[in-house]
Amino acid sequence: MQAASQIQQEIRRLKKEKNAIILAHNYQRPEVQDIADITGDSLELSRTAAQMDGDVIVFCGVNFMAETAAVLSPEKCVLLPAGDAGCPMADMITVDELVYAKSRHPDAAVVCYINTTADVKAESDICCTSANAVQVVNSVKADTVLFVPDRNLGQYAARFTKKTVIPWDGYCHVHDGYTVEDVKTAKHAHPDAVLLVHPECRPEVIDRADLVASTSGIIRHVSTAPEQEFIIGTENGILHRLEKECPKKKFYPLSARAICPNMKKTDLVKVRDALVNMYPRFTVPEEITNRARGAIERMLVL
Ligand code: 13P
Ligand code: SF4
Image (cartoon, rainbow, N blue to C red; front, side, top):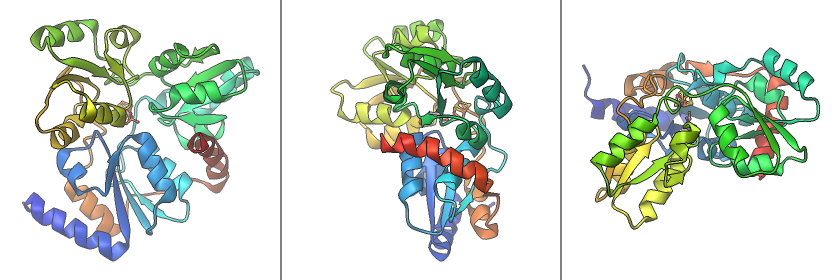
């Protein structure tokens, strides 16, 4: 078996040769985060995908992320090293289901979480991420918002708006899996720690948190906060960046169960092989690209 450092070296060489950029989500394996040009949350990664130079984007994440990059940069070759890495929450709504829901709520604006397929984005008015869901919901003209597919994020945004939010009944199994019992156990074990959680968590977990933010929002908060200990209520891959950027502070996962198997499918060998073979490549049909881009760009303009 080749050493990780040797594969990392090969990846660096291939990156130059192919004029590629590597984007990694904050939940990726530590060694994958370490080889990336940019590690970030969904908003930062889609902004980078929209603006970057280069011919090739290697997306270390799950399929809706690579799809979003392909929609924003259709002239680039977008590779998803773990071609089968999906998001179960994104699969909790189909375009036909959305079209039917729209017919039942004709006056509602559709706000779709970025964790959706491109054809669902194409049927939506505007996209959002966990970093800007509240702002996006408040930005639409309609008084009613159909929010898809994450019910927890939709309910969280509803706390900060006068609009009527109708949340879809989807959820992220990682974040929805945190319980009040997890909060009690972690706070009992670490009484001085601050609790930071992601808005994909259940309302009763959010109610007990000191801060609710996207993954990069959590990282930014920790780096400037005076406190020294933190309980982290989002997928445990984030601990790598937190420990790297704030080596003197202490981090405790809210639950050891908080692992997204799809986010862990990418490894160094798959990144290297994707660059060698220029495969698995992501493309989106032109007609869907054009309509989905509108929803994403309206969000990026905000
Ligand atoms: P953010 O990094 O945008 O907060 O997203 C969390 C997530 O679950 C992505 O799949
Ligand atoms: Fe989907 Fe949740 Fe995994 Fe993110 S962490 S990819 S929302 S299942």
